[in-house]
Image 1: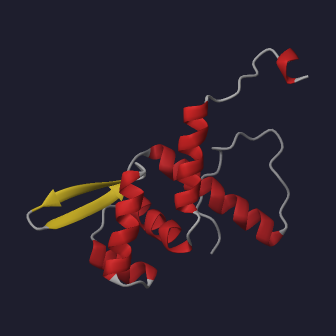
Image 2: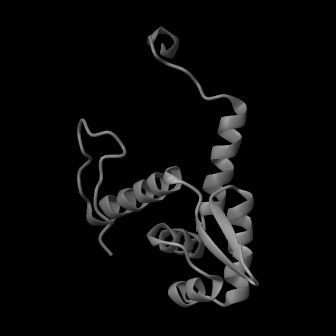
Length: 125
């Protein structure tokens, strides 16, 4: 059935593995908060810890995992590291997850005909 579709292609095993690993790392509320904060701009561990309500050591551990997965980048300035989201794909991924959660929470209908990157506003919080 699917093979009859003209543009149908399954992702390769490496793409599937990397996507699953990214989702696995995002399956933590603190990491989602950290990434959302980083999407607003560069930040230090101390600032992120305050924003997400976690200990700096815990935030550092989360950042290390997010960095290994390629979701976060660090920029060293002397003894400080300033973190940021890796790229616009991270923004799209996280924004869609939050929009989906908002729609599910509020019982909102889907957007017929919209592509998945059409949202322009932050999810209601």
